[in-house]
Image (cartoon, rainbow, N blue to C red; front, side):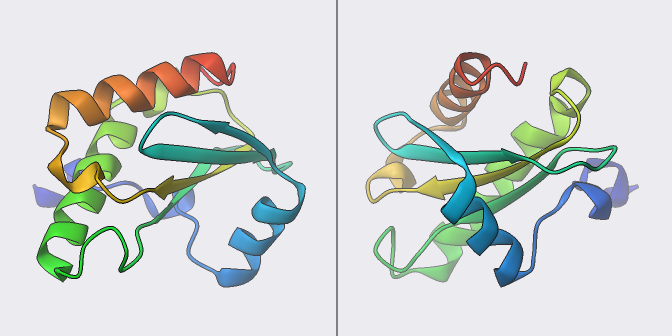
Length: 117
């Protein structure tokens, strides 16, 4: 039952080399506290990875909560996102104070502006 709320494995970016490729060649879009780098991936699905460093919060609990919220938002809207992209979501300090609704609004706004929804 819990697995139905998880982001599927084929939609995750986990390897450092994949993040580096997106950083070097990807296009940028950013809101105040959440930045996005995205790039075509020539795969049949869109993948996403989240970067939440120690500068965001020294508390792993807060960083993981933020990451879980962002994964849930992406997973719930996965059917709307265009296929064939890798997206790196970079979180800036101050985002830990954001409520779920604010994170969702920022992420969906950015995805629309990038033309991925």
